[in-house]
Image 1 (cartoon, rainbow, N blue to C red):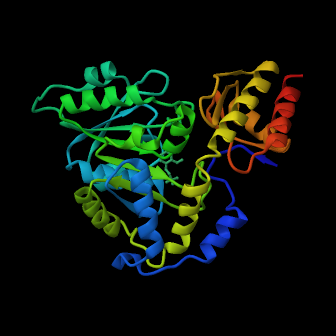
Image 2: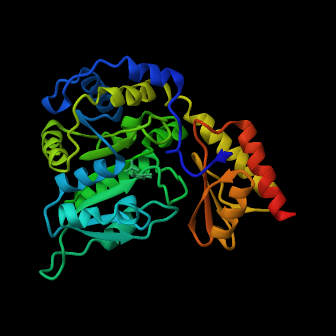
Length: 334
Ligand SMILES: Cc1ncc(COP(=O)(O)O)c(C=O)c1O
């Protein structure tokens, strides 16, 4: 089986498991877990932020960020494919009492012009827009990367309009690897950043929220009332720390394999955009039916819409898996 459904399906490596088994732990609700403290400090430094908070999931990282940066009744501006709208179970309405305003971007990312056009001037009838949340890489945007200049331009527009800023950097590591820059260049100037260890980095569990000390202090309380305060959680933080230290440099391999996959699919007559990171989106008629056929032939993937299949490369997909996937897709054409 070649599992191209998501980079969340990875298995912890033997070395990662050893690091987890050997982890020094303490009660993290009492802020006494040395492994968590180390992970939070290293993640904050890499993301260019003052402090960080370990949380169970990317969804919780996003929801805590939205809660910390808004008041009930506010409007959050996001690109149309944004994760908090599509895949977070309506949490922003429940937890933060905010409205999500979706704005169609260009190639998966907002532009300053589209952002500014979407921000309505003060009017008693409107929910006041107070937060911009962007995603890098953009998942439903084909894994596309927003560069440093594009990020800066959006931050500038947001600031001019008085909006606070959040980066959903679930895959900010992939964005930095694709650009050949430091993560901090993409994440250091947001008010809050979410970043995941359980996706391309291959850890079994965990994400962080990073920001200044005052916001992370507030985030800790929100995490607590959401039930995300965990005890000897250094056991899982050790997997995340191992991933942070050892798996960022290898992400370019996943990106290279995505490119090989795309080239093979194109040669076989399939239509897909050139991948920028670890995701290949294939245009297809009757995607759910094709996903079933592919599954029966040993290739697992997801249909993200009736006309689109997503293929994701990751730690547990090797060159042989890519060749196998290309052969199966070629067979569907014959
Ligand atoms: C862009 C993005 N943000 C947030 C999340 C949420 O992460 P989790 O599944 O850990 O809740 C995901 C999950 O795939 C994602 O793709």
